[in-house]
Every structure is written in C-alpha cells, then in structure tokens.
Length: 504
Image 1 (cartoon, rainbow, N blue to C red):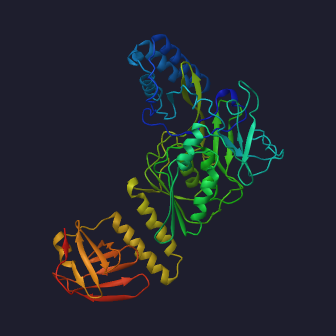
Image 2: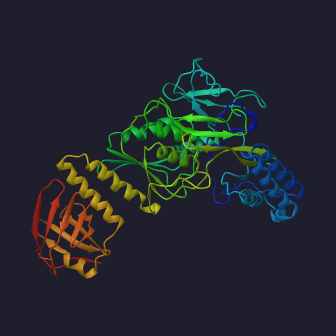
Image 3: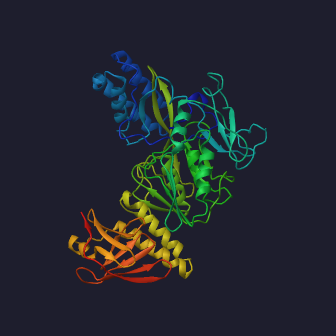
C-alpha cells in the first residue's frame, strides 16, 4: 500500500490514491510481538488524536466535524471500553469512522513501526516548466512529460523539515531509481508490483492482470516487460477485478500507454489542504510501447477500488476502453495517514476526485461498467467481444478462425446441457486413430498419440475443440460418424469403428 505523506511534508504535492480498505480492517498481527493492551487514558488520547486529525484534514469540513463527533460520543458512552487490545480498538473505530458517509478510506491502524504514517515518497506527477508542485528534476531542468517523485521527512530529508518537499528522483524515460530496502519496497517486489498474469489468449488477445498498483523502484521495468510481451496482440484486456488500489501514479502510467502522446486531463483534485487542489493529466512520455488505437477492455468488480477505480474511470470517461463486469467499490478519495498517540495512524480522506469535464465522481457510487455481468464471467465476455472486434476487420481466412474461437468462448459462458445418454452415444473409436471418450461427465477428443482436448457443447450435436475446430455428430445411438470443420476451412468425416468407449 502506498499512503500519502504525513502533513509536515504536504506542501505543493499531488497525493497518490491509497488501497481500498477492507470491509472493516485487515491488519497483520505479528506473532512474535505481544499484543499491546490499552488503558482507559490511552484510549482517550488515541480517540482525541483521531478526532483532531480528521477535523483538521478531512476534505469536507462539515463532514469532518460530524465524524469527529461520533468517535468522541462513542468514547464517552463507553463503547470502546471493550477494546482492550490495539487491534480491537482499531477495528471498532474504523467501523465508526465510516458510519457517517461510508467513506472506505477512513481507518485507524496500529502502526508502531511507522510503516504507514510517514513512510516515504508517494507522490509522482508530470514535471514541466513553471510547475511548482513538481519542482525541478535532479539535472536542474524540468522536462515536460516526465514524472518527478516528491519526498519529504522520513525519506532522506531532515526530521521536521517544512516548506517545499525535496525532489528525490526522476523516473520515466532516462536514468533513475533507488535501492531502498524498506518493508514497503520489499513487499512490492515480492508481489511483482501488483502485476499478475500476462498472457496471450486464443485469437491473439492480450490479457494483463493487475492486482494492485504498487509503486516502488523496479516497477517500470516490470511493467514494460509485460507490455512488450503483449505489444503484438490485436486487442487488450486489463483485469483489475481484484485490485483494491495503490499508487495513482502507476495507474496513470499504465493507462497513458493506451492514450496518445499529447497529455489530456484525467482527474480533477479538490482539497482543503494548501497546494493539493489541481488537475492531473496523462503522461506525454511512457517507458513502454504506446498503443492508443488497440481495442481495450477493462474488467471490474466490487473489489475494484481507489486507484483501480481511477484507472477504470479515466479510460471510460475518455471513451478509450469498454468496461466489463460489475460496478467498482466507490472509494473515490485520496488518503493521507497521520500519526496519533500510542503507535496508531489514522487514514483521512483529504481530497475529492472528479472528471475534469463533467465533474462526476465515483465516491460512494463506483464506476459503472459498459457491459454489466457477474465478475466471474467478465473475462470470457470481454474475450468474445475482442474476438468479434478483431474479426470485423479480418480477411475471410482469419475471420472463420476468430468466429470459431468466439463461439467456443461464448459456449463456456452459456454452457449447453447435454444428457449423459446422449454423450454416451457419441463415445467410441473412429477411423484415423480418433477417439471420443466420456470422462467426468464430459466428452474429450484425442487422436492416438496426441493430447486430449475437452469438447465444449454448442447444441444440436455440435461441439467445439477450443478455437481450432468444430465436431458435429449425426443422430443415432451410437452415432455412426462425426464431421470435423477446421479453422483453416478444411473438413472431414470419420466413421465409427467400435462401440462405446466410456471411462466414468
């Protein structure tokens, strides 16, 4: 998770979107460290610290006072007396913080090592001449389209330093990076910066799974490697169904690869904090292949949160991607973490984020998909849509192969029911060393010595062998033969040699 810098390092910065919090609070308890207990005086000091930080920094002043009043009244009513441990209190207070408006970025966390509050540089934005928020890059000359990470105390700066944050490093095209071995950076590397699968699906459709936006040194190299692997695909699917958020900069970096090189407004940021309100743009320079015209699909779910919602929000608003799945979680604020007494940190929503053209937000309502479906079906449906988009521009030879692949993928979504008796009638040995077997209630096909393939029912005695071929059985029990239609346009009919070959 990439939180925002603490308040002492806030001047002139644009903050990253934080991870979507769990329904209550998910905090790892260190089994090697005793669970601290809390006294009544400690609980009071913690709650007062929480209320003060929210009052001072929450994006809406009136709402801030209401939230602070709730936790103070709950303290006075004795609601937190049952919270003897730090983890009990964190969970109870988190629930109460979200009671007013359901803001999922509000949270109380036990953070004795300061890994959340004041954890280092989080803010990356495009640099350019006359951009006081970005400052000047290390070489002394601001470069339009490059991004500058802005750091502050806790990241090489003097403790308690104020004023403009220091420039830590420049990233993007050109040299840059550091060898930080902080727990946050180690976690990002261990999780491959949130990048999951990179795969080429049948029909030359690219698939990239991003389970978090984990900004850390090395992220750009990992992202570029994935994008280069997929750069020759004819359509792209990006899966953020399991992505709770993270770095807004990484979100911008990924989607900028699918926009033109002329920066366009992406989000508008509003805050009570001085210097934080601004309009953000896409990047003029990106380190990997830029593909502004490739058909693009984004998979979403209720677990898509925060920076992953920004990712979906921007691409949908710009008309650049088709969103497939369920609406997103509705966590549309940027969050800062502030230390409070006795080793805690409170997450406070410091900004509102909106579309710079319409003013629309996703906080509380999520981002609506263009094709609404159960999230578990989203990949197949997006794959079918991509195949048909590619097929519409393909020549006749390739069009048949793409249509056969689309039919097979769609059949997996809307599975045809075939009775066991009917399936059994198709099983047998056929000429040309071909076998059809019934295994586990499904038909499989194999030419002797080859790998067997599952046969997907298409209806009416027709089955798909992936996107490679269709098999059709005539009526009869057992069926006397079958016909194969191949993606290259050839076909053949094969006569039964034996009776049933069942393995159930």
